Image 1 (tube, rainbow over the protein chains, first blue to last red):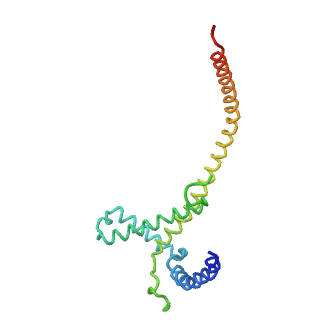
Image 2 (image 1 turned 45 degrees about the horizontal axis):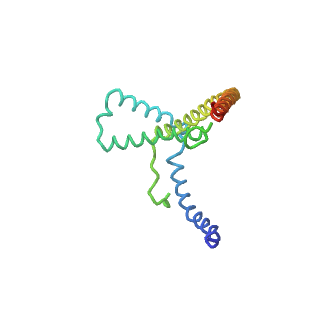
Image 3 (image 1 turned 180 degrees about the horizontal axis):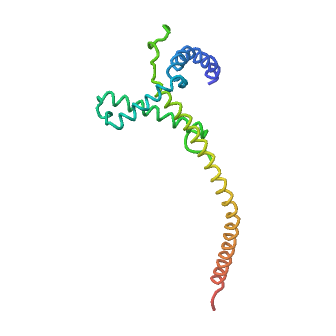
Length: 99
Length: 83
């Protein structure tokens, strides 16, 4: 038991040392893929909205392959889950509201 | 960018990134708003409950006293032999 406790700092240090390069790689990807939208991208965002609306109106969303539809649903779900992450941050609790 | 093991990063459509960030902020606002609303509601409820507790405790105490007196009386009647 005592030896396990004595090993703990070195274990934590190796864990940090191993995780650091991976975190760096994550950050390099995140800086591109998770970046907040820039003001210069507003036209593209508007175009995205318009595309979504026209596909909803014309029924073009029905003419997709199963693969495309699956991917779109997964992307939509991912975007939706950001709302729940935001809710958890806003209520400062993981499960339920802590009143 | 050549040191990245999984190839160059995907250019995620600005529309998707806009959706993520806007939903995240909307979620934070929603969570904070409802946290505020529900904690106020709960505070009011606790206040009311504390007031009612005093009344309820008194009532229970009185009922208990009456029940104890009745029990004592019944016991006395049982223990006194009838002629």
